[in-house]
Length: 303
Image 1: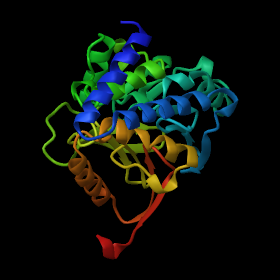
Image 2: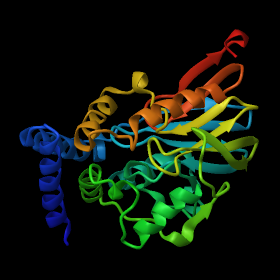
Image 3: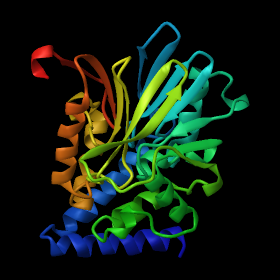
């Protein structure tokens, strides 16, 4: 099936599915139209991500890139090493590469490494440009399915499948080669809301790796550095209060077209509460999957 046919088929399917839930087909079509327009009008000269820099130590800094549409990308620089967290949409490849090269002049000559918090299309678009992609076992499983032209976890959900297929067409998504995947953490069934599965050391940072129970998406990962009070949460936590106007506009459409951005909304809410309960006393810098960095302080009396 070519891309145009795929887009038409899944647009019709989305309208049919949402019509059965009481959403007008006209509203669905209008949402898809506005979503496509937002993606297109944010390219080229109109691509204006918010970029902020967060000093962790004298030798470690986190640069947060927040594009108008799609997930954040964080770049951790520790000493002379770089680690990316998530990558955004594939349709912004050239724009993001330009941003990356401004931050990392030697980008084209280094081995590029990325940690992916979960296997959603808006987080994985640029994975093919990386040499190594670190992921939880379940996230790696999902990405391997996609590399074999099979349905990923989102597409296994009938309510989410049309939107994901539409996103893949509109953003020119290409699955990452399975050979680039490197599993981190233990492979196990998650029985708690969020559960520790391993550790990741990078430069001066020492992360504990946690996996959620799948409220947002199976395989969802969280990185917490208790020494430096930083956390990368993926979409278990999204900073809705600190979004740019463009981000807020973009984030209106997925909940309409998917009925919910979460696999299980109530479970994801419980995971988010459990995540914040995992943090210790002190001032934290929390980097969500969308929106600006959240400063969060836990006083001794709150423990």
